[in-house]
Image 1: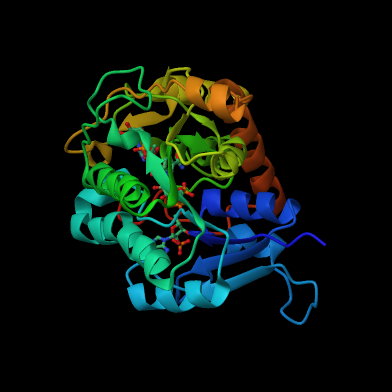
Image 2 (image 1 turned 135 degrees about the vertical axis):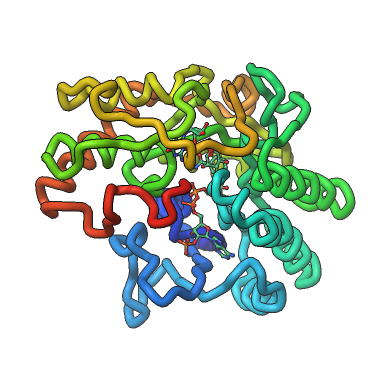
Length: 346
Ligand code: NDP
Ligand code: GDR
């Protein structure tokens, strides 16, 4: 009988964590998700895969653990004895990282060292995946690949650079199978509502339904390389199945502006974006990342990973989902006055 593989996912309640949990369960893994305690339910994205603890065949287990709490990480890892650890938890919003720089450094940066130290001190021989980001390239012009120098432009980007290097350091110092996936923007119907793509597609659905008349946005000229999240979590898994621990860029290689994404999304419901979108400087960042376009050649050559969904199709998938959600729910279940975040900064 083959041993069941055991994986830990931090950030399992996030966009990527939920898709990765589905993928690993479909591959027969036992999955342990770390979630943080909240006064409201934060498990919406994984409720559909929740398994009753009374079920003898249960393979999804949830544990309270915050990346700010190192001793808890030690306790859980020594109990679980995982084969693979995916570190996806982070304060992941770039604009918010300017409001909360210290908290972002603590979770997005120091959280990684707490997890790596927990693995080392427990003496685990597990593989480790770090959710690194194209935001680390920041002001360095595209195309960006594994050799491109970092020039982060936000407290978030700086914290991710720390996590990138500490992951490499543990690989080199202790021989750990520790890998950085340097992922460019990837989106889906599960994308958080304050990231630009989902903010747009939710607004499009609301405008089409007559529930909203304006959409306030920041810089429409930035260039991004938007891929489809379910394909990117497959890439994460492949990185941990490689012969050696290495760092990989995952991207589509195609470039679009925020304006392009607006156009694809509004066109999907037969509307012109220019009639609805208004500028609001609150959505600008003190320093912007102008252009991120990834070169995923290494992932293709070594891992056989290739993205299929490109940005125009991605916008269609997300708009269709949000239009349907409004038709079935009447309105989005969680909503604020104009469909954006309550602080009006993200
Ligand atoms: P999300 O913001 O959707 O999810 C982040 C997850 O981290 C959530 O589960 C959140 O919990 C959890 N979390 C936040 N703070 C803590 C903490 N202090 N302790 C424990 N858990 C915490 O991000 P994505 O799924 O989009 O991204 C996954 C990872 O990949 C992140 O690290 C992100 O920075 C990185 N990344 C993302 C890219 C993208 O385009 N999506 C591109 C490159 C990197 P809760 O649900 O309670 O908020
Ligand atoms: P990003 O994603 O900063 O690239 O980080 P986001 O969707 O927030 O912004 C993309 C670009 O759109 C511009 N923009 C706006 N952004 C938001 N959120 N709201 C607006 O109203 C708005 N108007 C214009 C931004 O200025 C920016 O240029 C994401 C996160 O998932 C990170 O965790 C991840 O590491 C990177 O992608 C890769």
